Length: 484
Image 1 (spheres, rainbow, N blue to C red):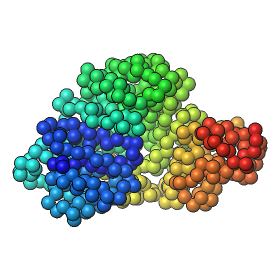
Image 2: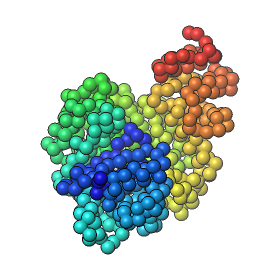
Image 3: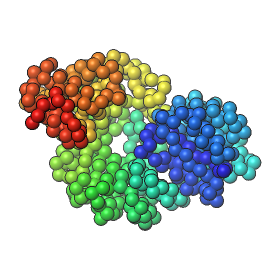
């Protein structure tokens, strides 16, 4: 029996609910009365409701994100039907902005907007005391990190062994990128490293191996960054991996020296470029020098041992297909280990919508709120770009076909984009989908396209595929691949 239940639908099991753990950690005397339940998107909401109600709670707090709106709506309906006396409260980035018009708002009793780490505890105390707030929509001010109880003891040993461990050393962001929720409330608040270090040490001792630091721009504060990175450098093991998000414009010489000292394979750096087009960057509140971004990526790739994950966005206001193709080709030349192609989204509350009239933007009204078309990219082109992004994830990332893919653009001076675009136009009619494609079927289609459509040397293609599939751990290579 628990007076309170905290729950959410995570995108995948490996992503632990960091925000809910903060809420639970800051409940004070109520913490022993709270249960935390995490579901993935495959969990039927009716079953999730049954698990929640088995605790006989008086209050249920649900974390809402763009990926779980439909599941949360169905869960609220099921809870209301089975336990009409239950008090439901929502929080999270999806529900914190444009709240009054959100479709979930009529389904819940209360909503706490913003960082609810401390506000949720006060809300629960009032409800359990019989004096719930009169307002439906409550707003929590950003808390001072010094006043927050840290959530790290709430990671279970199983969490540490099988999931990403989310950590933070700061909150907030100083930048104004109009597509990003972090741009809505500017400013950075840092945690005291003297508080964090023993917590991180305990997590490592308990088996933490996959770390994701959620600081929006880790390479802002050199002194804090040096303390944190020196800590992880000292504790590096072959199993430990630390993910950081950095901004190329902030990669100063001292930061470069610090990153060069990283032990091999420890760091995974997410480098948000988004576009090399300086006019488009300035338009979306992210002014940057394309040359500086390129220099930063080249340095990271060539002079550090970090795994480099770079980001581009398709669909930005003023961006043509040719603009995006130039960004893609420029990024391929820089050879990041991973290149994630995101599709522009209009997240609730972000300023990107101010361009709608000028650029005639039409958005998907349902999550993930992705762009459907604008005056430079029609609906068919954007649909093809979305397929391109997905097929690139299958083909180009995680080192899947690192030896085979370059055969697409093997001639000196070749532009990779049209070759990959043509490949995607071949793959989609063949499979009729962009998810759930078996690896060997994808490999066969790639080989067929290279050999039959492009006329590449059959022996070279099959040799590259054998090397790629062997590296991926394929135990039994198909007969069509032949023998080395």
